[in-house]
Amino acid sequence: MPRFICLGVLGWLAVGVAVGQDSPRPNFPAKATVTSKTTDDGRKLSIRVTVKLDPGWTVLANPSGNPKISTGQLRVRVHDKERFDSVEVRYPKGTPIKDDLLGEFNVYRDTVLVEVDITRRPNDTRAVKLDTRVLAFNNQIGVQTGPAIINHQVP
Image (cartoon, rainbow, N blue to C red; front, side):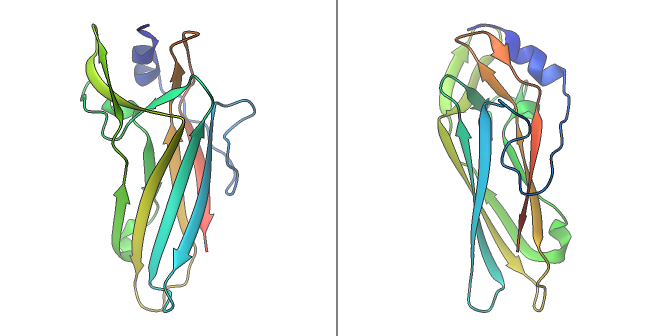
């Protein structure tokens, strides 16, 4: 396996986008979309973040299973968590990879579904803001992206 993943983890370059966009920049190999449901009383919010990767591209799973490269793992972050009664983010299990230099770690391929459950405080009807951080790499062509932040807003 090429060793370019190390460079991506060590050399971060954050890229922001406007709320509502599903891709941080043209031709980026990952797109993220968000769907949500609320209970009748509006307090419980179930959010699903779906990250779709272009063929041949992978992202580090969360958890990556390797502390050497954990800063590069996929991350969904809920902003202003303290305003909610509870926030739970659940990531799927990744596919294990073994590398001579980095050791073992987990990755996602194709489509990743991250589940976020939020319990709002009574009478809180403000929008929920969250972001998805993606650092993608392609071993077939030996290319990595800089990490990108994809912003989302849920009513």
